[in-house]
Length: 148
Image (cartoon, rainbow, N blue to C red; front, side):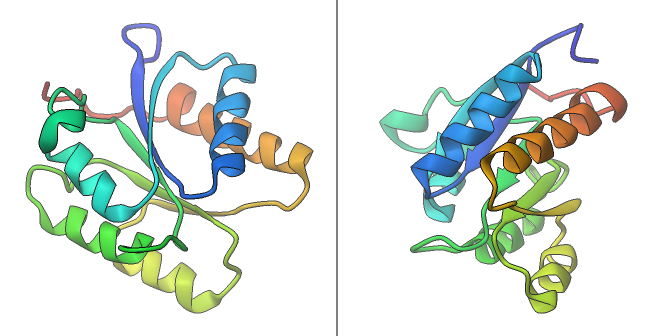
């Protein structure tokens, strides 16, 4: 799949260090992806709906990597909004968060997440986790053709 076209990934993450680590891990894994980043759920919705000057030409992502704990609209609120939108609900969303709460895991899946990854606190383990995630989503899984 990734040999045919670059896959597009939207990272929704308010912590710049975690966003940089995700980018680094995906690059080190050799994945051919176009990465876009926003820092909260409201911004992510504007990106997906191509609203405003900044996002007017945004490409629809093939996968969303979503943090739960963000200011403004949190990850669960964003996830619920995306899965209620007929044009966006088919985009797979993987939650990547520090939360260990069973209630957050359950809520993420109930709101339509396709995966829940707890962020390791060790940098090397974090990079390994993102690499494994990349292997699964970009090498093993077949994603639907992007309607763009």
